Amino acid sequence: MHAISDETRATVDVVLDYARRRALYQDVPLDKPLTPRDLSRLASGSITAEGIGARRATALFENVLAPACVSTDHPGYLSFIPSAPTKAAIAFDLIVSASAIYGGSWLEGSGAVFAENEVLHWLASEFGMPAGSGGVFVQGGTIGNLSALVAARDSARRRNAEAGRPDPGRWVVVCSAEAHSSIASAAAVMDVDVVKAAVDADGRLHGESVERMLDAYGEAVFAVVATGGTTNFGIVDDIASVAEVTKERGIWLHIDGAYGLAAMLVERMRPAFAGVERADSVIVDPHKWLFAPFDACALIYRDPSQALLAHTQKAEYLDTLTDTADWNPSDLGVQLTRRARGLPLWYSLATYGTDEYRSAIEYGIDLARRIADEIETRDGLSLVRDPQLSVVVFRREGWTLADYQAWSDRLLDEQTAFVVPSSHAGEPVLRFAIISPLTTYDLLVGILDTLA
Image 1: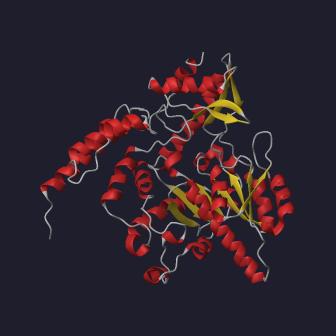
Image 2: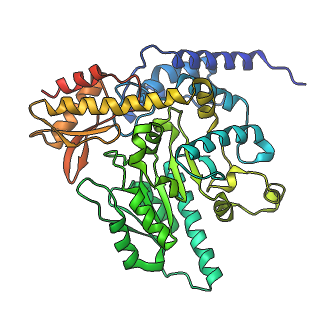
Image 3: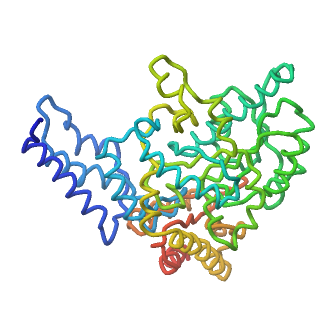
């Protein structure tokens, strides 16, 4: 048995001390990026033959590198889609690393996989998917969407083979014009074509529009992607009508709910997501609106056996894993080696209970509605579209992109908030993405005041 050296103990103590202080910050610093020149001046030279030691390395991170990173868990981080992990999830993330768990196979990580599956089965039930649905936690929405579409194409290929039909010259995936950029990215990786169906005046995809695309492209279409909460506006497609069309034609329906699908945990929001229960696959990112640390995407299949056929890797050294009926997460997505990234969410849910999650999500929805109403009362400000979830998009009348950018830079320099400009139909706009339960109405009103 090898003794733990004093140096090793000291290193662990230094790291855990900093982690404890950061996790328990009363006022999380917003911070801001530094230029490459400044970082080169302040932080170069840390990689040496002898090492600089744990204390110096930790101090360098705490005092130079960390302050050069915008804190996504700050209440004033309102750009893109923020992250607001619970303290329980943050703390348990340390345990996941300290435990040296491999989360790719049942053989090596059955306890971790079981706990992850508890979460996946709960989510599937919340989404109305049938018993037997299941999946895997992957890195993020891009990998989740890619994995689901790979499974969809593989399923279409198998159907063609069984029916004696040739595959099309080019496969096609249909999505909305408002779909996330990761759909186009996945299609590029797969070397398939993306066809964007028209949306209505509110940015929603409907079954009629999808049907026109299916009529035009026929059997080349292997999947349709509907969105459960777009990133820019939080728009939920008319999933029920899209599901009706895809089920009639036997085409795989995938729901990209990376941001918004978590809203289904709020009872009054469920009608907006009608049709999700008919999907062949869905994703939702816990590192967005389910209060988990980066990086975690829950990918759930209606029939996981379809994913196994598409994703199980074959190699002599893997035979001991793939020749069994065990539930191996790595057989359900494009990643073989994987961290047990669903465990922090499991621990947080087990600690706080699902009611706390429902309340926290509902808070964001209510706050978005409240600040949208405030925007409507202010001269010079107007909503671009009524919020459906927790994203509020609005404009400052008469401002150019340069005006918005200068205002955004000043807000960050003053360490008030992080609100970057967005755009819609070529028009520069502003956008609040509300995730954190620590984001307050008063904070948002204070930001609006700076636009006067």
